[in-house]
Amino acid sequence: MKLAQNVGGIDKILRIVLGAAAIGGGLYTQIWWLVGVGALVALTGLLGRCGLYYLFGINTCPVKK
Image 1 (tube, one colour):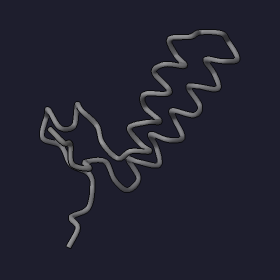
Image 2 (image 1 turned 180 degrees about the vertical axis):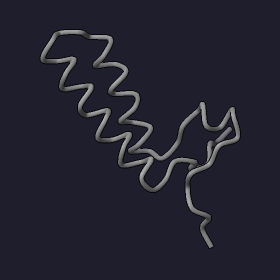
Image 3 (image 1 turned 90 degrees about the vertical axis):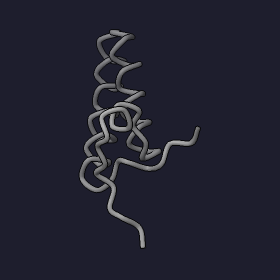
Image 4 (image 1 turned 90 degrees about the horizontal axis):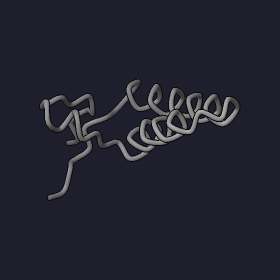
């Protein structure tokens, strides 16, 4: 099963920025679960695919023509 891209635009940028902030904050405070959550959020932004969006039928990616 291949997931199509369903994250796009401002959603993608926010995920990358917030994920990086969570990773940085988690490393600074040594809260390791926050590093993991931040990595997951940043990865969904970088790849443009979100499993929860897929389950709920949400798509913020513009239609490719």
